Amino acid sequence: VELQHGKIFLESTPGEGSVFYFRMPFVKISDVEKENENIEGIDAEEEPGRGIKVLIVEDNPINQLLVIKVLQKRGYETTIAQNGKIAIEKYKNEDFDIILMDLQMPEVDGYEATKYIRRMGAEKAGIPIVAMTAHTIQGELEKCLAIGMNDYVSKPFSPDELKVKIQHLVGSKQKDEKSVLK
Ligand code: MN
Image 1: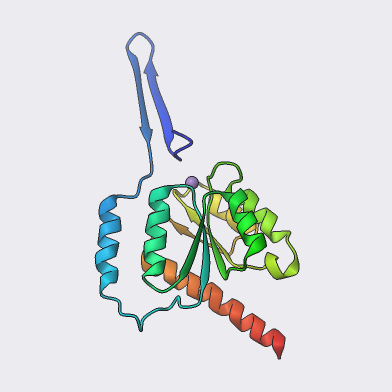
Image 2: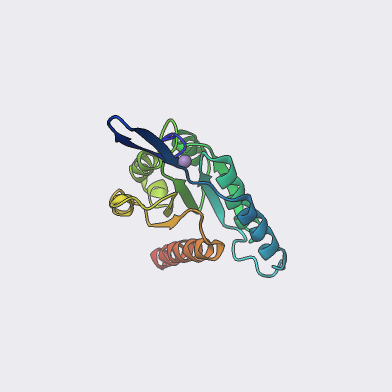
């Protein structure tokens, strides 16, 4: 259950019995379908993501599918990494404009991957990183920001919220680079 980001509970009364139950976060397929309907109406001129390369670091296949669909329909270029270790390898060999980072993943989780990236060379270390959190654990968001993530979205996320946050972070980075050139 914990590997799937859920929680398990136990209530037990001596002599009477025990109840075990668990909670698991899932993206409903109907949400994926609704998003497909929403984005069919967007025409090619409204592609805020054109030319923006997004590295999506996520181990859950349904979440991967949802993020890819949302971003590709808005013109973003997407690359998937199944965990933090693969993400670091891909990022070493290729440049991206922003990273969307799941937190709980096998091998190397989102926290460790972020810490690693923030210690990379100057050209690489400054990339905007947005955490994708399945649930709001007390203190988790503070932890994300403390280790150097720029922002976060809660899953299942609102497509517009995700777009606004990406545009804000990528836009301000491009502005910084321009002011450095001057
Ligand atoms: Mn995960």
